[in-house]
Amino acid sequence: MDILILSISAGGGHTRTAHTIKKYFRRHYPGIEVETIDWLKYVNPMVDRVVIGSYMGTLKASPIIYEKLYDLSEKEEGISDISRTLNRPLALIMERLVRKSDPKIVVCTHPFPLEVISHLKRKKSMSCRVISLLTDFAPHNFWIRDGVDYYIIPHEDLIHEMIYKGVERERIYPFGIPIDEKFLEDYPVNDIRRDLGLEDRTTLLLMGGSLGMGEVKKVFSRLMNSSLDIQVIAVCGKNRKLKEELETLTAGSSKPALILGYTSRVPRLMAVSDLLITKPGGLTISEAMAMKLPIAIISPIPGQEERNAQYLMNSGMAVRFRSRDYIEGMLRQLLDNPVRMAHMREICGLKASPHATRDTCEFLMSLVDNR
Image (cartoon, rainbow, N blue to C red; front, top):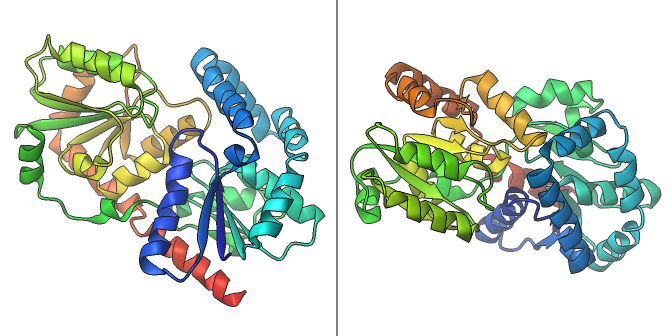
């Protein structure tokens, strides 16, 4: 095998990034053998359910605890030691996988399999190259491991922090987070609006990630009950209950609204939207940046998404709505300021990495050829 990509399904971004790379290779380099594996499912479906279930449960029930664990692990205390202890027994499974597939390159889009493969490479003689592909705008220590050959990071802005954390500059490649090529296309906005049954008015796209997490319902209700001249597209992901609740809320409002579950039409939805209101997952915001779509942040997951939010706001691409805020007033202040909106779109374009997938795959190809 040429390239093995390891991820886990904690949220949708890590696995989507893996499949995006595989899809690009199938289209542009059909002779290259690429396989994607959900690491925890490969280890054992029960392990996957327990780990992912515990992760999601902690986020929903005790986000403050998760945030504390995230901060502790940044300081190499507590959770890092636990992670290493849990991952060492998995090294035997990883070793069997690597020997069976014999990849030239192993790419990790999540820190969990990265910890295992880097541990294995430190202890064993392995000829495969190991790539750490960061899927958040936060170079947490979990991503930085002895045994990693190269780091692909979301933006050159993060280079200095990576160097500060001890990574040599020549091993850092700021290609960006790989996104689907559909986000690079030009879309006929008027035709899409007509197909979706939307009107020609200010359009807000509300998203809660693949799992429909966060304060989507609360924000949607405030938008529907506001005096703003808007229409709303809400994407609920795989959260069927949320979709049903939002559909109920539309009955009491005269505003046009389109409620969707999990959909592959996100590039078209972004194309017709004036503002994205979303959790700041690394992949979602990379897609929005490529489409020059200003962002309003809601409900960031403590830890990595808080760091993503900080990056977006510091760069001028986003504003943040908190549950206690008067959202209608903040939106009016933003939407009534065309200079501010234009500035946010311009910065999104400047900070975007629209060709991250191409650049990443060409780099991986060079490693395959050199091998």
